[in-house]
Image 1 (cartoon, helix red, strand yellow):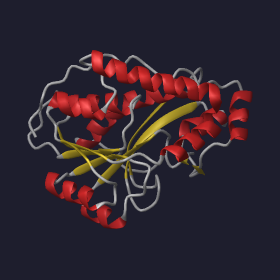
Image 2 (image 1 turned 135 degrees about the vertical axis):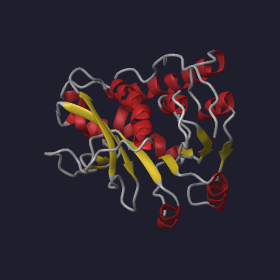
Image 3 (image 1 turned 60 degrees about the vertical axis):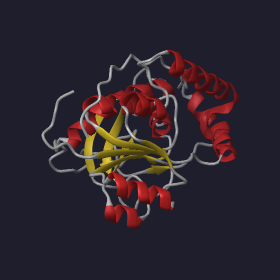
Length: 267
């Protein structure tokens, strides 16, 4: 890990997730010291299952549940592979706190205590204006914003047959996925499955966030030429049928991440 004279104080604020985000946060921690990891509750289980059933169908949901179970096993038996934020925090001795919600008093109090310069945020709730006024929130979004703001952008990008997929690091404002662009990276869409694309895009996140933290953002902070703003919601069963009808694949949700050798950096 490259040392910085005055590294920005970075707090991770996220909902629990086991397949992609923990490895991404471990890779970020390898590059930049993290002050704390704050976890907020996920959306209600019934709503999550209903949306997943429509978007993925029973067969893919079964593989997703199996992937979740496998990730928890590997998280326990493999020291340097990460499938939970709690393990990243424990291995690096980073303060880890579970709070009641993004808008809850205990979350606000935790942010005040950790005094972040940047809050790297992965939550499904809107961050309230009063929080945005006090702290700088960054978000990762798996599209080349402003195209495909909203949910499951890889699904929609593949369904629409684009040649490129992408990931954007942007500063959050009061609108979903509309804040200033800090970093972007594209990858070819050809041959990508849904889950394979997410795995590849998450691999780009830590280097992009690290570059943005070192103030190496896009000079103009403007989207690439030719990218038009768009927003998509949760896919329906009809959208899923159309996705499969184009020959697209969901693929395998679980990946055995490469080991991440971590060393504790100074806060």
